Structures are given as structure tokens and as C-alpha cells.
Figure 1 (spheres, rainbow, N blue to C red):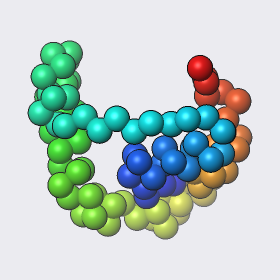
Figure 2 (cartoon, helix red, strand yellow):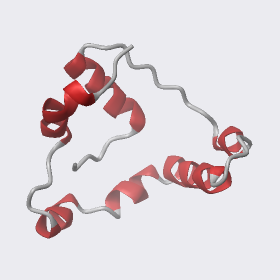
Figure 3 (spheres, rainbow, N blue to C red):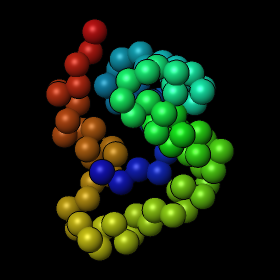
Length: 90
């Protein structure tokens, strides 16, 4: 699936396609790191980096290069159309 979107944009898009309320709950990276499960520190650090350097993160991932490696790569819209019945609602 090829997507260059933040969580908020993806959530809004999902909301329009499957007609379900999607709420984005922004959790600060420090709060995420405090959850205490294995890997919480690493994930919190990743979320902080992605948040502070969003453009750099997106620029480092070439969709055209990914498509050359996987010609069956789908857009988010196509993936969602094919998989929306698998998304549990409510």
C-alpha cells in the first residue's frame, strides 16, 4: 500500500470511505514511552522523530522506487476498497 499521509489525513480519508467515525487521538511521544510495554520507548522515539521531521520521513520514501520493487503496490484508496469489509466497526 503506497501512502504518504499523516495519521490524521489517513483517518479522515478512511472515515469518508467506510462511513464510520474516526477520531485521531494524538499521544505525545513522552506519554507513549511511559506505557511500559516492551518497545514503548522505541516506538515513542520513532513517533517523535516522524512528528518533528515529517517532511524528511516522507521524502526518504520514494513511492516510484517502491513500485519498481513491487509492481502490485496499491494506492490507499484501492487497498481500502478491497479491504473495508475486514475492518471491524463498532
